[in-house]
Length: 151
Length: 196
Image (tube, rainbow over all chains, first blue to last red; front, side, top):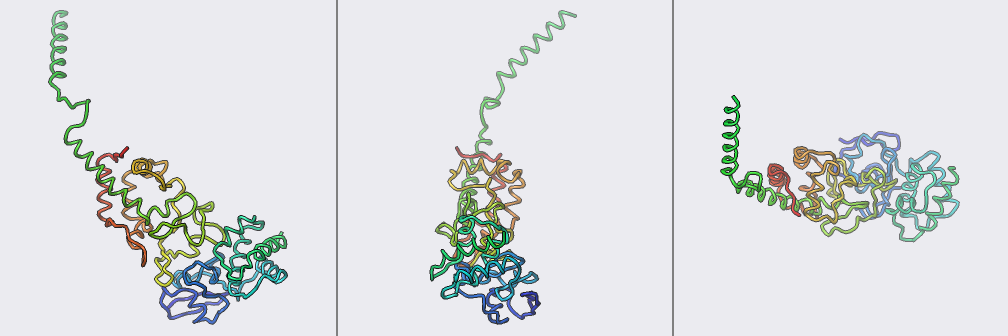
């Protein structure tokens, strides 16, 4: 039995500790905001937060996440989250939307650690979030916008 | 009394001269054949050690700013960098993908305790065998380790141990860990000699 604390609620799951956290979130807990993109930790569609840090849930195993504070896109909150989501909406960043939950989750971690990121900080922090629609320019602009709102 | 002193001094001088004359050729002038053998064995042990340290399972993370990946030693995908603590930056930290509890068989992401780049002082990329040897035994560049502590590190550290159990798709270190530790002991026993 693995206990996963997700968005403030504990869930007891009878799963293999090696199960990717992503599968537990989507298939066992019906939290489908977090997406499966590549399954190898390379695209970032599956990013959630574990104890405030970004975590690629396709790569992090349920056993690794047990006993820690897991936050998905459905449960994210706070000043930084509001600033990021607000900027995303104002700038109409989203196209197809598939990568965007992961983008937002990564951007929140980036801005939580660094309230005034440079372009290089943004590149290094967001490099692992891939967007097939190519909205990178808007993502970058939205992060700068969110930083301004947080200043 | 004076006569006795002079005679004693003379005798001593003669004795010492004879002693030096008859001393083995090797004393103070070069190694004995036993010492030469031990040196050669110790150097041979180092060559084995070097093949391990230069294998991708070790060298991929003993890099300056960004790890390499896979047996093909390509730049790590996605792009990640050392950061201030050797564990990455913001949303791209090592532990964001690499599990402390071990390899992920589904995502094929390798994992082990304290997964991270080696400290910057332990940069091994681009070093010759001799340079690597001198680096490894230098306390300023090996985490302040004595030769004995080096042996212990190679024998017991779990991240080092991952090299022999890297998961699917990655070649384990080709020298068995037990054998590798024996080579370390032989190298240390011979005074940690280094090739030029």
